[in-house]
Image (tube, helix red, strand yellow):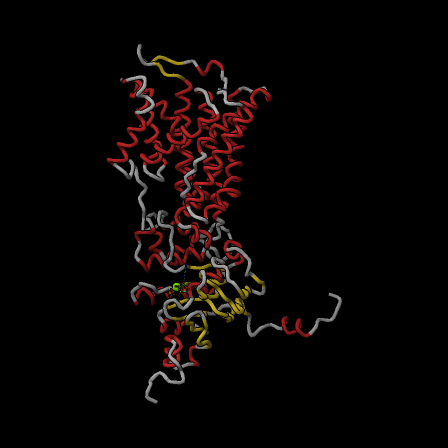
Amino acid sequence: MGRRPNMAEVVAAEPALSNQILEVEGLCAHHGQLLALDGVSFTVGEGSVFAVIGANGAGKSTLMRSIAGLHRPSEGRVIFDGTDITRLSTPQRVELGISLVPEGRRLFASLSVEENLLTGTYIRRSGHWTIERVYEMFPWMWQRKNQRSSLLSGGEQQTVAISRALLANPRLLLIDELSLGLAPIVVRSIYGSLSKIMEGGLTVLIVEQDVNQALSVAAKFQCMLEGRTTLSGKPAEFTPEEIEAAYFGLNSTSSIHGKD
Amino acid sequence: MLNAIIQGILLGGLVVLFACGLSLLFGVMGVINLAHGDIAVAAAYVAVAIVPVLHIPAIWIFAIVVPLFMVAGYIVQRLLIQPSLNSGPLTTLLVTFGLSVIIENLLLEIFSANSHSLAIGSLASSAFKLSSQISIAYLSLLILVVSIVVVAGVQLGLYRTRTGRIIRAVADDREAAELIGADYRHIFGIAAGLAFGTVALAGLSLAMYSQVDPSSGPDYLIFGFEAVVIGGLGSLWGTFAGGIVLGIATTIGLFLSANFGALAPHIVFLLVLALRPQGFFPKKVAV
Ligand SMILES: Nc1ncnc2c1ncn2[C@@H]1O[C@H](COP(=O)(O)OP(=O)(O)OP(=O)(O)O)[C@@H](O)[C@H]1O
Ligand SMILES: [Mg+2]
């Protein structure tokens, strides 16, 4: 460029506080008439865990699906590593490095465990994860590779679903309801694996109903209610009462305890 | 009687070729292609039209028409069937019905209502004797072998190749397949290409075996459809068994009475439907 950049460009070129791999700007999404997302904005720093919490129907899944490209937002933008991806299809986003582990795991029921894993390599994105590395990390999968995925327990299915997503070698991994329907000990073990998985610099955006679990791993979080963000920041910045109030939509002026 | 059964098995090969693509389209996309029979007839007419022009032995026509129809299948899926998929199964049914009507009328327009067949010389009539009463036509045997090869090949392709694995994944869960980077429309196109290729094979075989006319498509559709249903929806080997059973029903019906041959397979179809509505080999639905 032969001209002097104007002020806006200088500001835009300024490296954001660490590298923001995902920027969601004023995202609105509908299900028919229903406004499921109402101007949601946040940013996720590369290599960190970002948690989205909120009660049933808050719009968490709609948010994840909009980022993964399964749902067309009606307004707003999704920016991945500086590129506006709002109009890209889901497979195009997978190729850029965004993988979603959908709510309910959604393994291919008629495929074996190994076949499910192999589908994850469909786009052949190169990176750390290969099927051998997955088996190294979860040796039980190797032993049960020929079983139908529908015969696995919930926790095993979730682990296979995460591994399938990892095999696309994403830079940003979205997980919708990691702990849904799982025993606490299983949840802890999956979170344990997740921190090991993240050593390679992976960014994780996680939706959780298990608030304590989510807040213990997340660098930043946001709480949603009826499509809006009611609280966002670092977990340590808020008291459990404040978070609870945001979660259930209790009016903060009338206070959570009701008596003060 | 034994002869009737053997001839029935041979005839079944042809039914299987018709049914294979129907089974595939239903298994992968949940689409019932009402134009299936007409596509077979169209393939036969394309062959009838180009054989005299190209001066090639009729048997080589397979190498031209089958790939041509595979490409056509991909295009028809992407341009016609895919847009209708999002508007529900009824729309898809109507679209394929429309396609059926269009093909039939185009053929009538171009080739008139006369029936045609593909001349393949001595192969059409030669046979060998198994016993004094049973003779087996080489062509029928060839068609049966081809049908086995096609079903086994498609099955192997689905279960042993990367593309086959993705086709099955898409059949299970389109959205989850998108999430691993597969464009399910493209995968559906491939499945439709396979289906059109196999039904073109059926149409060519039929034109060598007997005669085709522009309005015979729906009859073959019914046969193929019955084979798919009694075999068990979504199971290729089930479809194979269904085709053979219908073939045998036809020839035994003919054996019993000349008029009964056309009716017998439909009666068998209804009987199977009443006694075993899930078909011979229902696809296990995993939840
Ligand atoms: N396919 C759909 N059609 C119609 N409405 C939908 C659909 N999916 C979600 N909704 C509605 O959109 C709102 C947000 O739903 P969403 O699934 O995003 O919430 P969620 O926070 O993920 O909830 P949960 O914790 O139950 O998973 C809800 O009111 C829900 O009823
Ligand atoms: Mg949800």
